[in-house]
Length: 75
Image (cartoon, rainbow, N blue to C red; front, side, top):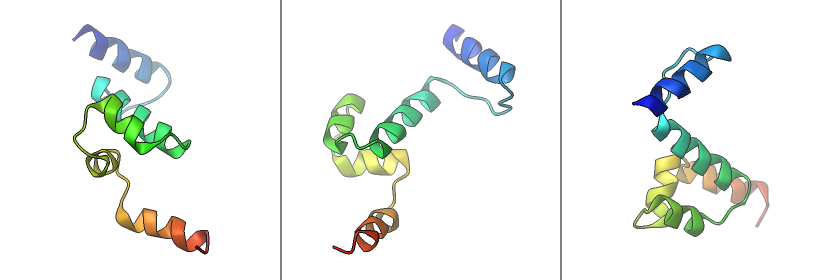
């Protein structure tokens, strides 16, 4: 509870109106790690997920987004 209070106080200080918590930070960390090129299997292990597909779904990466990468790269 103390961590949640500290995070929300800091968020309000910088103008974030939404409530955030440690789970928000966990998902955001994983999302940005993936976007910066970290291997999804490493992120999967860090989050203790059973499969890379679970991790991709968890961080909000859809099949359409993955397909767009292949189309953009003209593979």
